[in-house]
Amino acid sequence: MLNVSVGERVEMKKPHPCGNNLFAVRRVGMDFKLQCEKCGREVMLPRSKAEKNIKRIISE
Ligand SMILES: [Zn+2]
Image (cartoon, rainbow, N blue to C red):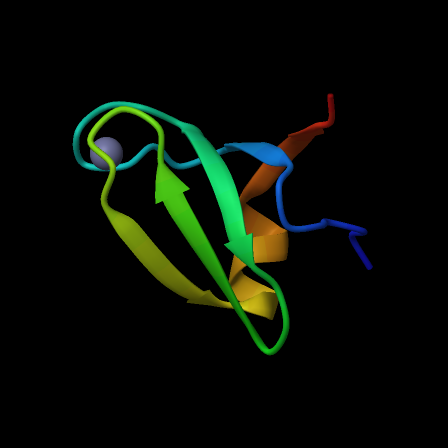
């Protein structure tokens, strides 16, 4: 299981329709809420789907 926390950023395997694949993590739980860093839109993904789609976690 991935250990992702709110406030971290993630690089996704599948990019957002706007072409960007870096997202800010807004909420974790049963569903992940991710905010696209380029266009600012938020997406909700079921945890299982989000975990499969995360390429790497960027902590700072
Ligand atoms: Zn976007």
